[in-house]
Length: 462
Image (cartoon, one colour):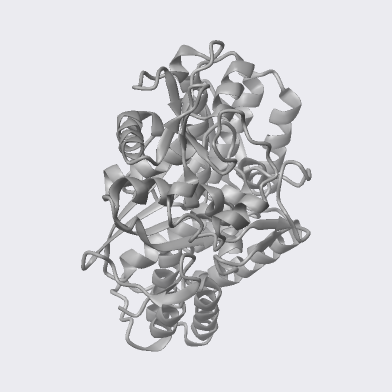
């Protein structure tokens, strides 16, 4: 096939060929569900949703695994702070995550495993590592991975163990043999909830973060698979540690192609809670519809940093409306199979085969929209809509989108209705009124009744 992907492991753009002809096995590190998803999560999940869609559009069967980390220190702390069980917290956050992803048009993966369902597989891998001398139980009860005993450590980050050791700023724990050693199994603390403890050969405890992904990917995709993805911040230490665990246990190559998406920046600084420039997806969806947010992200190639601001989102919304305006003028022909061999489809394919170059693919859509404005051809309209579907855009009724001032889709509107209901339940009537007024300004009128809240698209009034 003609697809070429930048491989973080080799630091080169390489021709892609799946291990099993016609079948791609892909794993992407999912969300640690202790809080609402933020814009960094949106960037990563839209990026790999595009990868998933293009692999399928290229005629490949894809087994896509996107995990959920539902046990971790932050989760335990947040559940205790709120006075609820870990399961109550994670179920709540997973439901919110699914609402956010639906608004963004992110497809459901083939498998969405929860880490807590794979603890036996984690224990098995830890046992293999201990048997091979790559893991040891420290005096405090934790089981740690002995980094210096794995010859390939550092190959993903491109740093030797000695370089990594020289840059280590964390004091060595008294029971660690080396500062770079990382935890595979955390010994249970007396004051932790019972639901955060599992029995093991090393005593009660819970898995470390890194071992979770090794166990889930191996269980669902096998010991050696095609693509592993995640945010650039996961490259080290998380993905480096996954390689060490997995290859240390199996003795086989773990992943052929490693993919990492760029950061979301705000005013050219990395978005982070510590800098106070942190935005949840739910916050952004209060002002912009999910398709605009998705389109905004598609305008930057997945490996590059993306700069978030209201101005860039406003510009994306204007650009998306141009495409919908072209579609609104002409009724598309019946759906037709895309001929990737010539014309705009061939140019679109060339862009996507070049390491998922979505800006190049969008340029083809704008050229096609310009042609549609001249030709008024139903066939051109059908092709524009079909190519848009590959990227997860342009699937709403054009008139519906254009009449709604924000272009809000049904999922985004319902998310706002749910947020208003929650505000009313909490007796925060000012917030409930604000949401209602904001929807009305976007052309969405709410109607309350005993049966619940419904909405009508009345369009934006001058």
